[in-house]
Length: 266
Image (cartoon, rainbow, N blue to C red):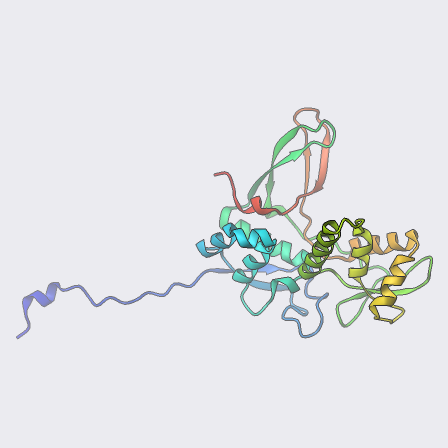
């Protein structure tokens, strides 16, 4: 006979499993500037998880912040699938970071900006829901099957193949600048960036040939490369436009994504 106490016994406990919600982020590149074999080749969006306390631990990590790879570690923790953050184009990386911030802390981003006219500091509120992709101008540009693009330069008439920079490229440029500073060598940011961007010159991929070419490149050609790169490079249009409360001057410019981006005041 069954004991009456059994009627009041709690049901056996079952371990519940929780799955993190995810979202799909539209990529500014639409996958067009990745080489074949890359997980995002020709992909217009990527699946990303919502942030948890695990990601807050990443943002607070002293070692990641010191190394400067805290955002790459954050993205690799969030992105669904086998995608290395260092292989992401800068614009796609920015889109993922903005999405993560919105889903975790909301779309209202308040940032302190210095007026370009009177130099007074003012807190400006930016609605992240209104951030859109930058318009890309591909006029006169040939996109190759490898995701690079080709240009013919106006002065030297050379044909150069250009790649959009990835997170790894930006890290390499930072390391080069640090090494120059460490050895008290002159800074060469414009030259280093051109060398990082150029894949081939007249179908020649030899690094020494590219270095020599960049060293002797006329300004009119280097400016043309930078102009076209700015027009072609996919990114989010993360800019501000506000009227200063002190002098009524109009201010506009790009908003940097820094560590404080993920730490709202309230």
